[in-house]
Length: 157
Image 1 (cartoon, rainbow, N blue to C red):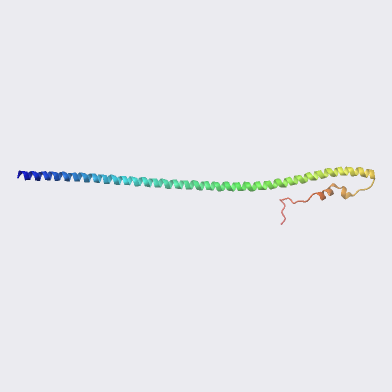
Image 2: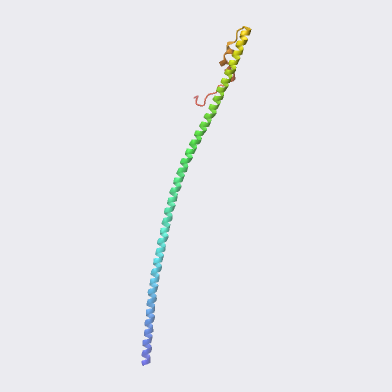
């Protein structure tokens, strides 16, 4: 009988060891589950923080892009204004150059007329005759040589 009680006490001891082993395994399993859940929670939080940071960065880049576009539009408008002013100034240069050339032509014509008048006076003194007032007036000679051009700032409506 002693042997049967020894076997039974040995099996209960082994059973208890298995039970203790299961409890230890369950405790480790729970700890591992808790650790995995905590790790997953940290991972989700890290992912959410990364996503929030990315959204903030996208918004900042969009704001910078809008600012750059506004600066580009302002610069383009200023460029177009300068181009328009430049075109006006070029037209004024052309007009003033044309006027200067016309004035130089008038001066040349007057100088030639003065020489002609001096020659006519000499011829008149030699010939002793009268002269045609129309042809001798230097301003009358100019009307045959010079076109009359309106200036661009005169508007006819």
